Image (cartoon, rainbow, N blue to C red; front, side, top):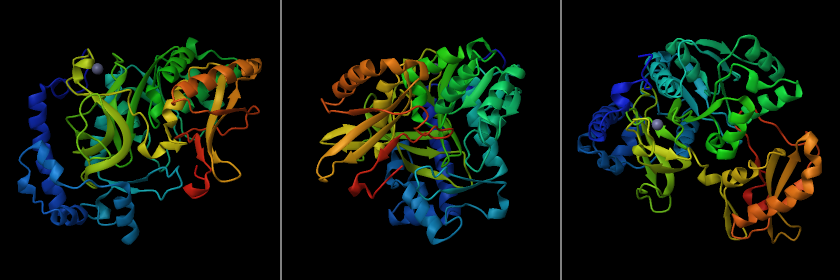
Length: 450
Ligand SMILES: [Zn+2]
């Protein structure tokens, strides 16, 4: 097994026809389980006139209506704490987690069984092994280990692989850097934003992380991990390969990961998830190469089965052979490209924060930024301002950055004018988990949204 690039060679290289048969088999089992055990799903299936025995093909899944985050929240609000979403008594659970709630929304609560946790760590094993983690590795988790599920599953996956796991826990960034050096860490797990911060802080401490033993930085938790300029910056700073993954609390684990071939996207773990890409306006499937919203059905979480869940993630699916690694699972080109609900309409132009970030990350002199959307004093005209902090030794670059960046942003947004504002050093918020660099202060958006 040590020599295989795959964690699960049989499933990861299975011919697609066979893969689809496997998915259908698992899907039937899931649908029956959900109908029998989970009132939430039974109610919804019944309302749609759907019975589990009507599921004869993968396409039949579309007879079931999609579910949303709001459905989950409503179920738990009406019937605290768990709503009617759980398949068995809470006393059968071994763990409780909840979403980060970073957007000020009500967090989702989740329970999992021993079997669920076995699966959660298995999914992270696909991604960790697939990006090169091996038993000899020393793995560092720059992660707070709180109620947010984050890297918990990756921690167990690395134990399962047989690597030496170092739980970073609640420590200062400085202390984390010292530990990474002291223990000869080879792999670091972190959000992309925090990986950048670790590197910046190391520079301030006079430490060159590129000279450390770290060979790979595995990121998750934000769409930024597949932004080319961000990845380049991290790979350069750390002198390591940077691999992207994406997961969600609603599944409990990752559903997609970058393999060590780094094809510019992430493989979908298709033997354990059924992922649809939907045109959000029409509800119809989006073909390969077209942007759409991820709708996920996961086969592995028994406690809270997830069926046709509208994730809000923007993705573009491309065929498996876009990558040369031999996996037969399809790829999300560019990883998760952002969220539909992050899209802002400014004077008739759509602005995606990730697209703005992609452009900003091309500027090495920029340290931190924030996208600020506001309305002028007459309450008529929408404005967008990018607030920028330059690196301490790059302050002289401001005039040039302002001119070039203004042009680059306008060119990518149908000529929309972006205001650019230079901020004092250290004035913008820094993030450890889930960066929130967009602030919409327009009155009709319900006040200040962060
Ligand atoms: Zn691959």
